[in-house]
Image (cartoon, rainbow, N blue to C red; front, side, top):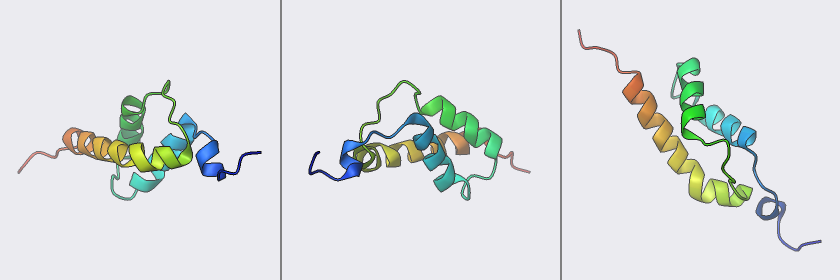
Length: 80
């Protein structure tokens, strides 16, 4: 057995990444259908995200920024 903590040994799955992103963004981005589509487009299903620690340290914030930017671009309301 390794002496390292579980979050450094266990890999995070695509579904866990998707749920994590949706959970942290659902109160900021109110169109749930659009949010789901953007997450599915930005987060590649075939990516090895590495450990939980690695994902949250290096990837999570970047994904949140990309998703928020795309959401805001796609959800622009026309000026009246």
